[in-house]
Image (cartoon, rainbow, N blue to C red; front, side):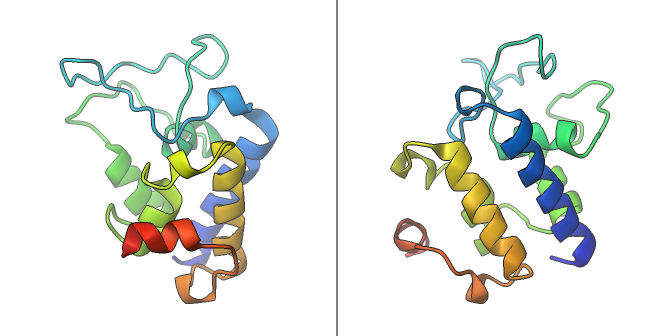
Length: 140
């Protein structure tokens, strides 16, 4: 992660901490219906839905999506371009995977702690200073 990507992660983390309630945050919920079609996300205040960290990123980074569909800018593109991590990377799993979420009663707080630890370590997973038993279980 470069400095700009770390700054984006800090913006996302601050946004989630200051603007999103616990009930609006869920790392295990995706925006697809039973037919595997992307469900349109209406907006921050009017839809009453919950979202994961990457789902809140367009609001935090003021990204305007004309319309989102599976052929458009994906959350994988978003994590790669704005945060410098690709799905499956150690940092991506640590921040954005749903695998760790079920081990935390407060997923929003867990994400904030994880993100702040990675920011403090300047994006270097070897320097992340948190209790990581659950993360090590995921990564093997």
